Amino acid sequence: MKFSRLTAPLAIASVAALTLSGCAKSDRGDSGATGSGTGGASNATLTFGAAGAPSTFDPFYGSDGETFRVSRQIFDTLVAIKPGTADPEPGLATSWTGSADGKEWTFNLRQGVKFSDGTPFNAEAVCKNFERMDSQNQAGQSASEYWTTVMGGYNKSADDLYQGCTTEGTDKVVLKFARASSKIPNGLSLTSLSMQSPTAMDKYKANDIKAQGDGFVQSEYAQKYPTGTGPFKFSSYDVTNKTITLVRNDDYWGPKAKVAKLVFSIIPDESQRKQSLLAGQIDGYDLPNPTDWDSLKSAGMNLEVRPAFNILYLGLNAKADPDLKDLKVRQALYYAINRDQLVKSQLPSGATVATQFMPNTVDGYNKSLQPNAYDPAKAKSLLAEAGKSNLSIDLWYPSEVSRPYMPSPIKIFNAIKADWEAVGVKVNTITKPWAGGYIDQTQAGKAPAYLMGWTGDFNNTDNFLGSFFPATGQMDVGAYPWGATLEKDLKTADSTVDASARNAAYEKINEQIMTEYLPGLPISSSPPAIVFGKNVTGVVASPLTAEDFATAVKN
Image (spheres, one colour):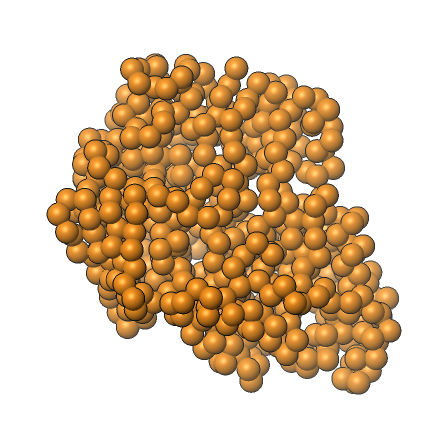
Protein backbone atom coordinates (compact mmCIF):
# COMPACT_ATOMS: atom_id res chain seq x y z
CA MET A 1 0.00 0.00 0.00
CA LYS A 2 1.34 3.40 -0.86
CA PHE A 3 0.31 4.92 2.44
CA SER A 4 3.46 3.87 4.21
CA ARG A 5 4.91 6.91 2.48
CA LEU A 6 3.45 8.73 5.46
CA THR A 7 6.56 7.57 7.25
CA ALA A 8 8.82 8.94 4.57
CA PRO A 9 10.02 12.23 6.06
CA LEU A 10 11.50 10.62 9.17
CA ALA A 11 10.35 7.09 9.89
CA ILE A 12 12.43 5.26 12.47
CA ALA A 13 13.70 2.04 10.92
CA SER A 14 15.22 -0.86 12.79
CA VAL A 15 19.00 -0.99 12.79
CA ALA A 16 18.65 -4.60 11.70
CA ALA A 17 16.33 -3.72 8.84
CA LEU A 18 19.01 -4.32 6.23
CA THR A 19 19.66 -7.82 7.59
CA LEU A 20 23.35 -6.96 7.86
CA SER A 21 25.80 -8.23 10.40
CA GLY A 22 29.05 -6.72 11.58
CA CYS A 23 30.44 -4.00 9.34
CA ALA A 24 29.25 -3.92 5.74
CA LYS A 25 31.92 -2.32 3.59
CA SER A 26 32.13 -1.57 -0.09
CA ASP A 27 35.11 -2.43 -2.28
CA ARG A 28 35.69 1.24 -3.00
CA GLY A 29 38.55 3.10 -1.45
CA ASP A 30 37.82 5.03 1.75
CA SER A 31 40.15 7.85 0.92
CA GLY A 32 38.56 11.26 1.23
CA ALA A 33 41.68 13.29 0.50
CA THR A 34 41.13 16.44 -1.48
CA GLY A 35 41.97 15.83 -5.12
CA SER A 36 42.30 18.13 -8.09
CA GLY A 37 39.21 20.09 -9.05
CA THR A 38 37.48 19.67 -5.71
CA GLY A 39 36.27 23.26 -5.72
CA GLY A 40 37.24 24.37 -2.21
CA ALA A 41 36.60 21.00 -0.60
CA SER A 42 38.25 20.13 2.69
CA ASN A 43 39.35 17.01 4.52
CA ALA A 44 36.68 17.55 7.16
CA THR A 45 34.16 14.94 8.33
CA LEU A 46 30.54 15.96 8.83
CA THR A 47 28.62 13.83 11.33
CA PHE A 48 24.84 14.02 11.27
CA GLY A 49 22.61 12.58 13.99
CA ALA A 50 20.07 10.25 12.37
CA ALA A 51 16.89 9.18 14.16
CA GLY A 52 17.09 5.67 12.78
CA ALA A 53 18.83 3.33 10.37
CA PRO A 54 17.94 3.20 6.69
CA SER A 55 15.68 0.33 5.70
CA THR A 56 17.87 -0.22 2.61
CA PHE A 57 20.68 1.40 0.64
CA ASP A 58 18.78 0.83 -2.61
CA PRO A 59 16.41 3.81 -2.77
CA PHE A 60 14.08 2.05 -5.20
CA TYR A 61 12.86 -0.07 -2.28
CA GLY A 62 12.89 2.81 0.19
CA SER A 63 9.89 4.43 1.85
CA ASP A 64 11.43 6.06 4.94
CA GLY A 65 13.21 9.33 5.49
CA GLU A 66 16.42 7.85 6.83
CA THR A 67 16.85 5.75 3.69
CA PHE A 68 16.27 8.77 1.49
CA ARG A 69 18.49 11.07 3.55
CA VAL A 70 21.46 8.77 2.87
CA SER A 71 20.47 7.81 -0.69
CA ARG A 72 20.09 11.32 -2.04
CA GLN A 73 23.77 11.95 -1.20
CA ILE A 74 24.82 8.94 -3.32
CA PHE A 75 22.37 9.11 -6.23
CA ASP A 76 21.03 11.62 -8.72
CA THR A 77 17.67 11.74 -10.48
CA LEU A 78 16.76 12.75 -14.02
CA VAL A 79 14.76 15.67 -12.65
CA ALA A 80 16.20 17.52 -9.66
CA ILE A 81 14.60 19.87 -7.14
CA LYS A 82 15.85 23.43 -6.91
CA PRO A 83 17.45 23.87 -3.47
CA GLY A 84 15.17 25.51 -0.94
CA THR A 85 12.03 24.88 -3.01
CA ALA A 86 9.70 22.10 -4.15
CA ASP A 87 10.13 23.04 -7.81
CA PRO A 88 11.92 21.05 -10.53
CA GLU A 89 15.21 21.87 -12.20
CA PRO A 90 17.59 19.94 -14.47
CA GLY A 91 19.33 16.96 -12.93
CA LEU A 92 20.84 14.14 -14.95
CA ALA A 93 18.49 15.35 -17.67
CA THR A 94 19.31 18.86 -18.85
CA SER A 95 15.89 19.41 -20.44
CA TRP A 96 12.67 17.58 -21.31
CA THR A 97 9.72 17.98 -23.63
CA GLY A 98 6.29 16.37 -23.53
CA SER A 99 4.11 15.41 -26.48
CA ALA A 100 0.80 17.19 -27.00
CA ASP A 101 -1.13 14.28 -25.48
CA GLY A 102 1.28 13.92 -22.55
CA LYS A 103 2.00 10.26 -23.35
CA GLU A 104 5.63 10.68 -24.44
CA TRP A 105 8.40 12.63 -22.78
CA THR A 106 11.79 13.18 -24.37
CA PHE A 107 14.75 13.77 -22.04
CA ASN A 108 18.08 15.25 -23.13
CA LEU A 109 20.76 13.76 -20.90
CA ARG A 110 23.77 15.36 -19.28
CA GLN A 111 26.93 14.32 -21.12
CA GLY A 112 30.22 13.12 -19.68
CA VAL A 113 28.69 11.71 -16.48
CA LYS A 114 29.82 8.39 -15.00
CA PHE A 115 28.56 6.28 -12.15
CA SER A 116 31.09 6.02 -9.33
CA ASP A 117 32.13 2.53 -10.55
CA GLY A 118 33.12 4.00 -13.92
CA THR A 119 30.01 2.88 -15.82
CA PRO A 120 28.95 5.58 -18.32
CA PHE A 121 25.67 7.34 -17.63
CA ASN A 122 23.88 7.45 -20.97
CA ALA A 123 20.59 6.69 -22.70
CA GLU A 124 21.15 2.94 -22.45
CA ALA A 125 21.71 3.22 -18.68
CA VAL A 126 18.48 5.21 -18.25
CA CYS A 127 16.41 2.63 -20.12
CA LYS A 128 18.03 -0.19 -18.15
CA ASN A 129 17.04 1.59 -14.94
CA PHE A 130 13.41 1.96 -15.99
CA GLU A 131 13.15 -1.60 -17.25
CA ARG A 132 14.67 -2.80 -13.98
CA MET A 133 12.20 -0.77 -11.93
CA ASP A 134 9.22 -2.00 -13.93
CA SER A 135 10.24 -5.67 -13.78
CA GLN A 136 9.77 -6.71 -10.17
CA ASN A 137 8.95 -9.98 -8.47
CA GLN A 138 6.15 -10.07 -5.91
CA ALA A 139 8.39 -9.00 -3.03
CA GLY A 140 9.84 -6.19 -5.15
CA GLN A 141 6.37 -4.96 -6.05
CA SER A 142 5.45 -4.83 -2.38
CA ALA A 143 8.67 -3.03 -1.44
CA SER A 144 8.84 -0.45 -4.25
CA GLU A 145 5.97 1.70 -3.06
CA TYR A 146 7.03 4.93 -4.73
CA TRP A 147 7.05 3.30 -8.15
CA THR A 148 3.49 2.15 -7.48
CA THR A 149 2.54 5.64 -6.35
CA VAL A 150 3.78 7.25 -9.55
CA MET A 151 3.30 4.46 -12.11
CA GLY A 152 0.46 2.42 -10.61
CA GLY A 153 1.61 -1.03 -11.76
CA TYR A 154 4.38 -3.18 -13.19
CA ASN A 155 5.46 -5.02 -16.33
CA LYS A 156 3.53 -2.65 -18.62
CA SER A 157 0.24 -4.02 -17.35
CA ALA A 158 -3.11 -2.27 -17.83
CA ASP A 159 -2.67 -0.32 -14.58
CA ASP A 160 0.96 0.58 -15.32
CA LEU A 161 1.50 4.22 -16.34
CA TYR A 162 5.00 3.41 -17.62
CA GLN A 163 4.95 1.75 -21.04
CA GLY A 164 8.52 1.80 -22.25
CA CYS A 165 11.85 3.55 -22.79
CA THR A 166 13.65 3.98 -26.10
CA THR A 167 17.04 5.50 -26.84
CA GLU A 168 17.79 8.13 -29.44
CA GLY A 169 21.54 8.06 -29.72
CA THR A 170 23.55 8.05 -26.51
CA ASP A 171 22.24 11.25 -24.93
CA LYS A 172 18.47 11.16 -25.42
CA VAL A 173 15.66 8.90 -24.22
CA VAL A 174 11.92 8.81 -24.84
CA LEU A 175 9.72 7.56 -22.01
CA LYS A 176 6.27 6.33 -23.02
CA PHE A 177 3.21 6.37 -20.77
CA ALA A 178 -0.29 4.94 -20.97
CA ARG A 179 -1.85 8.34 -20.35
CA ALA A 180 -0.96 11.86 -19.39
CA SER A 181 -0.23 12.41 -15.69
CA SER A 182 0.50 15.50 -13.64
CA LYS A 183 3.20 13.45 -11.88
CA ILE A 184 5.31 13.37 -15.04
CA PRO A 185 7.98 14.69 -15.31
CA ASN A 186 8.26 16.10 -11.77
CA GLY A 187 7.67 12.72 -10.12
CA LEU A 188 10.97 11.57 -11.60
CA SER A 189 12.64 13.76 -8.97
CA LEU A 190 11.74 11.18 -6.30
CA THR A 191 14.80 9.63 -4.68
CA SER A 192 13.27 6.19 -5.22
CA LEU A 193 13.53 6.76 -8.97
CA SER A 194 17.23 7.62 -8.86
CA MET A 195 19.56 6.42 -11.60
CA GLN A 196 21.74 3.52 -10.46
CA SER A 197 24.69 1.78 -12.09
CA PRO A 198 23.43 -1.02 -14.38
CA THR A 199 26.81 -2.75 -13.96
CA ALA A 200 26.58 -2.85 -10.17
CA MET A 201 22.90 -3.78 -10.17
CA ASP A 202 23.56 -6.72 -12.48
CA LYS A 203 26.71 -7.87 -10.70
CA TYR A 204 25.18 -7.79 -7.22
CA LYS A 205 21.64 -8.85 -8.21
CA ALA A 206 19.78 -5.71 -7.22
CA ASN A 207 16.35 -7.24 -7.90
CA ASP A 208 17.05 -10.22 -5.65
CA ILE A 209 14.76 -9.05 -2.87
CA LYS A 210 12.79 -11.53 -0.78
CA ALA A 211 9.87 -11.18 1.62
CA GLN A 212 10.58 -12.27 5.19
CA GLY A 213 7.95 -11.91 7.92
CA ASP A 214 6.68 -8.34 7.88
CA GLY A 215 9.75 -7.06 6.05
CA PHE A 216 12.24 -7.89 3.32
CA VAL A 217 15.68 -9.41 2.90
CA GLN A 218 17.60 -6.98 0.75
CA SER A 219 19.94 -7.92 -2.10
CA GLU A 220 23.71 -7.89 -1.85
CA TYR A 221 23.63 -4.70 -3.91
CA ALA A 222 21.26 -2.98 -1.48
CA GLN A 223 23.36 -4.03 1.51
CA LYS A 224 26.87 -3.20 0.35
CA TYR A 225 27.16 -1.84 -3.18
CA PRO A 226 24.77 1.09 -3.87
CA THR A 227 26.30 2.88 -6.84
CA GLY A 228 25.16 6.23 -8.18
CA THR A 229 26.42 9.39 -9.85
CA GLY A 230 26.07 11.58 -6.74
CA PRO A 231 28.54 13.71 -4.78
CA PHE A 232 29.24 10.94 -2.24
CA LYS A 233 30.03 7.22 -2.45
CA PHE A 234 29.00 4.53 -0.01
CA SER A 235 31.89 3.37 2.17
CA SER A 236 30.56 1.33 5.12
CA TYR A 237 27.75 0.60 7.54
CA ASP A 238 29.05 -0.26 11.00
CA VAL A 239 26.06 -1.94 12.61
CA THR A 240 27.73 -2.33 15.98
CA ASN A 241 28.62 1.35 16.31
CA LYS A 242 25.50 2.46 14.41
CA THR A 243 27.33 4.59 11.86
CA ILE A 244 27.06 4.90 8.09
CA THR A 245 30.05 6.40 6.31
CA LEU A 246 30.06 8.02 2.89
CA VAL A 247 33.13 9.46 1.17
CA ARG A 248 33.41 12.26 -1.34
CA ASN A 249 33.10 11.30 -5.01
CA ASP A 250 35.99 13.26 -6.48
CA ASP A 251 34.82 12.31 -9.98
CA TYR A 252 31.39 13.87 -9.46
CA TRP A 253 30.09 15.71 -12.53
CA GLY A 254 28.97 18.78 -10.53
CA PRO A 255 30.47 20.86 -7.70
CA LYS A 256 32.43 18.53 -5.44
CA ALA A 257 31.34 17.91 -1.87
CA LYS A 258 32.91 20.37 0.56
CA VAL A 259 33.64 17.68 3.16
CA ALA A 260 35.66 14.51 2.63
CA LYS A 261 33.45 12.26 4.70
CA LEU A 262 29.80 12.25 5.68
CA VAL A 263 28.91 10.09 8.67
CA PHE A 264 25.38 9.33 9.84
CA SER A 265 25.36 8.46 13.53
CA ILE A 266 22.17 6.68 14.52
CA ILE A 267 20.77 8.23 17.73
CA PRO A 268 17.06 7.38 18.15
CA ASP A 269 16.41 9.69 21.13
CA GLU A 270 15.82 13.34 20.18
CA SER A 271 17.06 14.73 23.49
CA GLN A 272 20.26 12.70 23.13
CA ARG A 273 20.77 14.12 19.64
CA LYS A 274 20.45 17.60 21.10
CA GLN A 275 23.00 16.90 23.82
CA SER A 276 25.36 15.29 21.30
CA LEU A 277 25.20 18.42 19.16
CA LEU A 278 25.81 20.76 22.09
CA ALA A 279 28.75 18.59 23.17
CA GLY A 280 30.26 18.69 19.68
CA GLN A 281 29.89 14.94 19.14
CA ILE A 282 27.72 15.43 16.05
CA ASP A 283 27.42 18.35 13.65
CA GLY A 284 23.66 18.45 13.13
CA TYR A 285 20.32 16.69 13.40
CA ASP A 286 16.78 16.95 12.08
CA LEU A 287 13.50 18.02 13.68
CA PRO A 288 14.71 19.70 16.89
CA ASN A 289 11.80 20.10 19.27
CA PRO A 290 10.22 23.55 18.76
CA THR A 291 10.56 24.19 22.50
CA ASP A 292 14.35 23.96 22.01
CA TRP A 293 14.65 26.33 19.05
CA ASP A 294 15.42 29.45 21.07
CA SER A 295 17.91 27.72 23.37
CA LEU A 296 19.72 26.14 20.42
CA LYS A 297 20.01 29.50 18.70
CA SER A 298 21.16 31.12 21.94
CA ALA A 299 23.89 28.48 22.15
CA GLY A 300 25.11 29.62 18.73
CA MET A 301 23.73 26.71 16.76
CA ASN A 302 22.70 27.29 13.14
CA LEU A 303 19.00 26.48 13.14
CA GLU A 304 17.10 26.73 9.87
CA VAL A 305 13.29 26.71 9.76
CA ARG A 306 12.00 25.14 6.56
CA PRO A 307 8.97 26.44 4.66
CA ALA A 308 5.86 24.45 5.60
CA PHE A 309 5.12 21.80 3.00
CA ASN A 310 3.08 19.40 5.06
CA ILE A 311 -0.35 18.75 6.49
CA LEU A 312 -1.48 17.38 9.85
CA TYR A 313 -4.91 15.81 9.69
CA LEU A 314 -7.27 13.74 11.76
CA GLY A 315 -8.14 10.70 9.67
CA LEU A 316 -11.58 9.13 9.87
CA ASN A 317 -12.56 5.61 8.81
CA ALA A 318 -16.29 4.90 8.60
CA LYS A 319 -15.72 1.16 8.15
CA ALA A 320 -14.01 1.05 11.53
CA ASP A 321 -16.86 3.07 13.10
CA PRO A 322 -20.20 3.22 11.22
CA ASP A 323 -21.24 6.32 13.19
CA LEU A 324 -18.77 8.24 11.03
CA LYS A 325 -20.78 7.53 7.88
CA ASP A 326 -23.07 10.41 8.85
CA LEU A 327 -21.75 13.71 7.46
CA LYS A 328 -23.30 15.59 10.38
CA VAL A 329 -21.19 13.55 12.81
CA ARG A 330 -17.99 14.30 10.88
CA GLN A 331 -18.90 17.98 10.69
CA ALA A 332 -19.66 18.06 14.41
CA LEU A 333 -16.25 16.61 15.24
CA TYR A 334 -14.64 19.33 13.11
CA TYR A 335 -16.62 22.21 14.63
CA ALA A 336 -15.66 20.95 18.09
CA ILE A 337 -11.87 21.36 17.57
CA ASN A 338 -10.38 24.71 18.57
CA ARG A 339 -7.69 24.64 15.92
CA ASP A 340 -6.61 28.25 16.40
CA GLN A 341 -5.75 27.52 20.01
CA LEU A 342 -4.16 24.18 19.13
CA VAL A 343 -1.87 25.79 16.55
CA LYS A 344 -0.89 28.61 18.92
CA SER A 345 -0.23 26.35 21.90
CA GLN A 346 1.12 23.12 20.42
CA LEU A 347 2.83 23.94 17.13
CA PRO A 348 5.89 26.03 16.24
CA SER A 349 5.83 29.66 15.21
CA GLY A 350 4.70 29.94 11.60
CA ALA A 351 2.22 27.07 11.77
CA THR A 352 -1.15 27.79 10.17
CA VAL A 353 -4.68 26.42 10.43
CA ALA A 354 -5.46 24.26 7.39
CA THR A 355 -8.39 24.91 5.08
CA GLN A 356 -7.89 21.76 2.95
CA PHE A 357 -5.72 18.66 2.62
CA MET A 358 -2.64 20.47 1.30
CA PRO A 359 -0.48 23.50 2.16
CA ASN A 360 -1.10 26.74 0.31
CA THR A 361 2.05 26.46 -1.81
CA VAL A 362 0.81 23.44 -3.80
CA ASP A 363 -0.71 23.86 -7.26
CA GLY A 364 -4.49 23.36 -7.14
CA TYR A 365 -4.87 24.95 -3.70
CA ASN A 366 -8.31 26.56 -3.37
CA LYS A 367 -7.78 30.08 -2.03
CA SER A 368 -11.52 30.69 -1.56
CA LEU A 369 -11.86 28.09 1.19
CA GLN A 370 -11.86 29.47 4.74
CA PRO A 371 -10.82 27.64 7.91
CA ASN A 372 -13.60 25.61 9.47
CA ALA A 373 -15.02 27.56 12.41
CA TYR A 374 -14.65 26.55 16.05
CA ASP A 375 -18.27 26.31 17.18
CA PRO A 376 -19.00 23.95 20.11
CA ALA A 377 -22.71 24.87 20.08
CA LYS A 378 -22.95 23.95 16.40
CA ALA A 379 -21.13 20.68 17.11
CA LYS A 380 -23.63 19.76 19.84
CA SER A 381 -26.56 20.67 17.57
CA LEU A 382 -25.27 18.50 14.72
CA LEU A 383 -24.69 15.55 17.01
CA ALA A 384 -28.26 15.90 18.31
CA GLU A 385 -29.63 16.06 14.76
CA ALA A 386 -27.72 12.89 13.93
CA GLY A 387 -29.03 11.18 17.06
CA LYS A 388 -25.48 10.87 18.39
CA SER A 389 -25.48 13.14 21.46
CA ASN A 390 -23.81 10.29 23.37
CA LEU A 391 -21.22 9.52 20.68
CA SER A 392 -18.28 7.36 21.76
CA ILE A 393 -15.22 7.15 19.56
CA ASP A 394 -11.74 5.59 19.62
CA LEU A 395 -9.11 8.27 19.00
CA TRP A 396 -5.60 7.02 18.17
CA TYR A 397 -2.29 8.83 18.49
CA PRO A 398 1.31 7.61 17.96
CA SER A 399 4.01 7.31 20.60
CA GLU A 400 7.81 7.19 20.24
CA VAL A 401 7.89 9.69 17.40
CA SER A 402 8.15 13.36 16.53
CA ARG A 403 6.92 14.41 13.11
CA PRO A 404 7.48 17.63 11.11
CA TYR A 405 3.74 18.32 11.31
CA MET A 406 3.25 16.86 14.80
CA PRO A 407 6.14 17.64 17.21
CA SER A 408 4.35 16.22 20.28
CA PRO A 409 1.55 13.79 19.35
CA ILE A 410 0.30 13.35 22.91
CA LYS A 411 -0.15 17.10 23.43
CA ILE A 412 -2.11 17.44 20.20
CA PHE A 413 -4.15 14.39 21.12
CA ASN A 414 -4.95 15.80 24.56
CA ALA A 415 -6.08 19.12 23.08
CA ILE A 416 -8.47 17.42 20.64
CA LYS A 417 -9.69 14.99 23.30
CA ALA A 418 -10.56 17.87 25.63
CA ASP A 419 -12.41 19.71 22.84
CA TRP A 420 -14.46 16.64 21.92
CA GLU A 421 -15.29 15.84 25.52
CA ALA A 422 -16.49 19.43 25.96
CA VAL A 423 -19.29 18.75 23.45
CA GLY A 424 -20.26 15.44 25.03
CA VAL A 425 -18.21 12.99 22.97
CA LYS A 426 -16.73 10.08 24.93
CA VAL A 427 -13.14 9.65 23.77
CA ASN A 428 -11.46 6.27 24.13
CA THR A 429 -7.68 6.63 24.11
CA ILE A 430 -5.66 4.30 21.86
CA THR A 431 -1.91 4.72 21.46
CA LYS A 432 0.75 2.59 19.78
CA PRO A 433 4.40 3.15 18.87
CA TRP A 434 4.77 4.82 15.47
CA ALA A 435 6.96 2.03 14.09
CA GLY A 436 5.49 -0.60 16.40
CA GLY A 437 1.94 -0.98 15.15
CA TYR A 438 0.57 2.53 14.64
CA ILE A 439 1.44 2.89 10.97
CA ASP A 440 0.52 -0.68 10.07
CA GLN A 441 -2.81 -0.69 11.86
CA THR A 442 -3.99 2.74 10.78
CA GLN A 443 -3.07 1.86 7.19
CA ALA A 444 -5.05 -1.36 7.56
CA GLY A 445 -8.13 0.67 8.52
CA LYS A 446 -8.25 -0.42 12.17
CA ALA A 447 -8.52 3.10 13.61
CA PRO A 448 -11.84 5.03 13.48
CA ALA A 449 -10.11 8.36 14.23
CA TYR A 450 -6.37 8.94 14.28
CA LEU A 451 -3.68 11.60 14.03
CA MET A 452 -1.62 11.45 10.84
CA GLY A 453 0.21 13.74 8.48
CA TRP A 454 2.18 14.10 5.28
CA THR A 455 5.16 15.97 3.93
CA GLY A 456 4.94 16.40 0.16
CA ASP A 457 7.46 14.77 -2.14
CA PHE A 458 7.24 17.46 -4.85
CA ASN A 459 4.89 20.26 -5.87
CA ASN A 460 1.99 18.14 -7.09
CA THR A 461 -1.64 18.02 -6.01
CA ASP A 462 -1.99 14.31 -6.69
CA ASN A 463 0.93 13.69 -4.36
CA PHE A 464 -1.40 14.88 -1.60
CA LEU A 465 -5.01 14.17 -2.64
CA GLY A 466 -4.25 11.10 -4.74
CA SER A 467 -2.37 9.61 -1.82
CA PHE A 468 -5.09 10.28 0.76
CA PHE A 469 -8.23 9.27 -1.12
CA PRO A 470 -8.02 6.08 -3.14
CA ALA A 471 -11.22 4.08 -2.62
CA THR A 472 -9.42 1.36 -0.64
CA GLY A 473 -6.99 3.66 1.15
CA GLN A 474 -6.44 4.58 4.76
CA MET A 475 -9.56 6.74 5.08
CA ASP A 476 -11.45 4.24 2.91
CA VAL A 477 -13.60 6.67 0.94
CA GLY A 478 -15.05 3.59 -0.76
CA ALA A 479 -17.26 3.31 2.32
CA TYR A 480 -19.20 6.37 1.12
CA PRO A 481 -21.60 6.65 -1.86
CA TRP A 482 -19.45 9.44 -3.31
CA GLY A 483 -16.15 7.56 -2.92
CA ALA A 484 -15.99 6.21 -6.48
CA THR A 485 -16.83 9.66 -7.87
CA LEU A 486 -14.02 11.27 -5.91
CA GLU A 487 -11.52 8.67 -7.06
CA LYS A 488 -12.62 9.09 -10.69
CA ASP A 489 -12.45 12.89 -10.48
CA LEU A 490 -8.93 12.71 -9.05
CA LYS A 491 -7.73 10.46 -11.87
CA THR A 492 -9.36 12.72 -14.47
CA ALA A 493 -7.67 15.79 -12.98
CA ASP A 494 -4.30 14.02 -12.84
CA SER A 495 -4.67 13.11 -16.54
CA THR A 496 -5.49 16.66 -17.65
CA VAL A 497 -2.63 17.97 -19.78
CA ASP A 498 -3.41 21.69 -19.58
CA ALA A 499 -2.07 23.01 -16.27
CA SER A 500 -4.70 25.74 -15.87
CA ALA A 501 -7.57 23.33 -16.48
CA ARG A 502 -5.97 20.78 -14.17
CA ASN A 503 -5.55 23.26 -11.33
CA ALA A 504 -9.15 24.44 -11.76
CA ALA A 505 -10.31 20.83 -11.51
CA TYR A 506 -8.30 20.32 -8.33
CA GLU A 507 -9.66 23.52 -6.80
CA LYS A 508 -13.19 22.24 -7.39
CA ILE A 509 -12.30 18.85 -5.88
CA ASN A 510 -10.80 20.55 -2.83
CA GLU A 511 -14.04 22.48 -2.35
CA GLN A 512 -16.12 19.30 -2.65
CA ILE A 513 -13.89 17.45 -0.21
CA MET A 514 -14.30 20.13 2.43
CA THR A 515 -17.96 21.10 1.92
CA GLU A 516 -19.68 17.93 0.63
CA TYR A 517 -17.52 14.94 1.58
CA LEU A 518 -15.30 15.71 4.61
CA PRO A 519 -13.67 12.25 4.74
CA GLY A 520 -11.19 13.52 7.33
CA LEU A 521 -10.32 16.68 9.21
CA PRO A 522 -7.29 18.72 8.04
CA ILE A 523 -5.76 20.46 11.05
CA SER A 524 -2.65 22.49 10.24
CA SER A 525 0.62 22.97 8.37
CA SER A 526 3.88 23.48 10.30
CA PRO A 527 7.40 24.65 9.41
CA PRO A 528 9.89 22.02 10.67
CA ALA A 529 13.50 22.89 11.50
CA ILE A 530 16.94 21.40 10.98
CA VAL A 531 19.93 22.39 13.11
CA PHE A 532 23.70 22.37 12.67
CA GLY A 533 26.60 23.29 14.89
CA LYS A 534 27.99 26.82 15.00
CA ASN A 535 30.88 25.81 12.74
CA VAL A 536 28.70 24.30 9.98
CA THR A 537 27.21 26.39 7.19
CA GLY A 538 26.13 25.98 3.58
CA VAL A 539 23.24 23.51 3.82
CA VAL A 540 20.09 24.89 2.19
CA ALA A 541 16.97 23.96 4.16
CA SER A 542 14.45 22.08 2.02
CA PRO A 543 10.65 22.22 2.40
CA LEU A 544 10.72 18.55 1.37
CA THR A 545 13.21 17.77 4.20
CA ALA A 546 15.51 16.75 1.33
CA GLU A 547 18.76 18.55 2.12
CA ASP A 548 21.94 18.14 0.04
CA PHE A 549 24.91 17.76 2.39
CA ALA A 550 27.47 18.19 -0.39
CA THR A 551 27.22 21.96 0.11
CA ALA A 552 27.98 21.75 3.85
CA VAL A 553 31.06 23.68 4.96
CA LYS A 554 32.64 22.72 8.27
CA ASN A 555 35.11 25.22 9.69
